[in-house]
Structure formats: structure tokens, C-alpha cells
Image: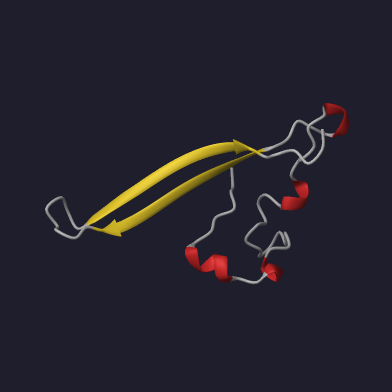
Length: 84
């Protein structure tokens, strides 16, 4: 499975770089236009889920437990429906 992946510098990019171009854009693997956001099965639901994985590496001040520490967390949330 391929996922959209971002680094801190990506949050300073322009909206033009997020238009679902399958060859280059940062959101090419799960385009916002393709997400199901309707609750009712009759209207295309149920809604999609979004997973977020976060990894942060930080320097430790004292060095007693090493020089670096990597913190990770994962969560999965249901996309809030626009209509029922």
C-alpha cells in the first residue's frame, strides 16, 4: 500500500502542488477528490478512514540514555461525513 507522505517542509508548499497529479504531487496516492465523505450507503458511503503515522527524532540533552530518541505514534480516524 502506498501512502501520501509529508515532511515538515511540505507544509510550506503552495496549494498548486496538491492537485492529485499521479506523477508528481504529494497527494497522488490518496487524492482528496477520491475520498468517500457521504454517510449513507445509498449515497456512496460509508465514509473512508484516514490513518496517520508520526515519527519524530529528537536529540537528548544529557546523553545518558543515548544521543537520540525516536518517538512514533499511529492513529486511524473516520472521516467526518458531509451528508447523511
